[in-house]
Length: 133
Image (cartoon, rainbow, N blue to C red):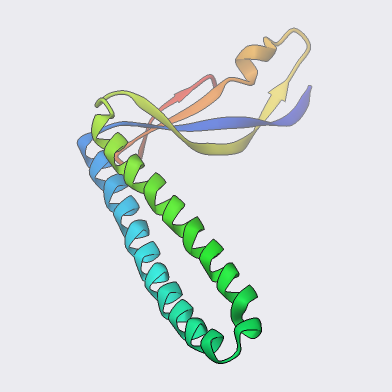
């Protein structure tokens, strides 16, 4: 007999509470990005003022701020799309939340596929089911 680690998929069973919670979390992340974008805009305006006086000094920094701004705008757009997708999730369906590790004992003759196919199903923050233990 041998003890090994195996991956365990953690899935969430979709409920109205899950959809509300996920949408709220995504909205909070969007709000944080909005604040970061405001800060980038402020910094960009300051750099533009410096660039008027000394064009060479602020050029590289302005380009970098524009890249940062674009990254956040792209992320914001993706998050807004995810918020729309949350509303389309069907109650009772399962979505992957992550992966953890567990220990399992292996013996000669064990079904490898069964040993390696463990899942934990969460519903409203509680373990609702353990599959493939």
